[in-house]
Image 1 (cartoon, one colour):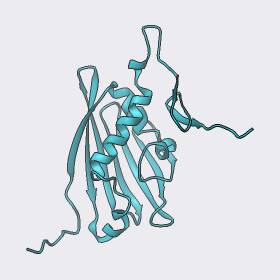
Image 2: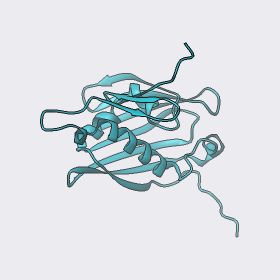
Image 3: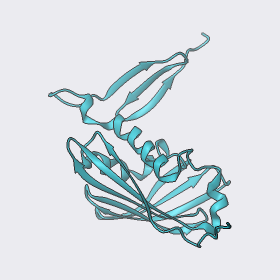
Image 4: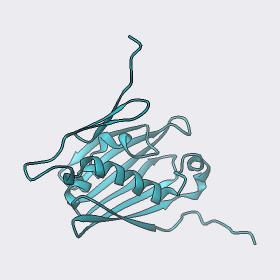
Length: 185
């Protein structure tokens, strides 16, 4: 049986629970200058314009296809929702919506995505192995863990963590990952 794809995929949803309060997740999702540090498809990200607390324009670039860019309108509801809608660009992503709900000591994050299948080949090689939405949620969870306040004690939050691996020292400082590799000197 031959399946005919529609021009647009309707919003599809996936959810995950992360170990941080909605304010931490919201901060990560609205930090457009640092998406390239955790968003798996991005090679460059930049906040272009910010209008108050609830509206921004951000630009994202991708390694493949070469020189692919997206300009997104970003609408926010503090600690509840972040919506990205494509303004321009050739990538097949037309809409990404992150909904945040308190869940126990963490946050339930529901991700809804809409894709334009006229350009599906552009995304095919870069989709995380488990699919777009699950891959993005998994990447967000990794970023949240780096920022999570449960690393600290009653006096505050841990801002430095050092992990030794066979190849290098991995240093997490204020949520950013650095690698220290041995020198030949």
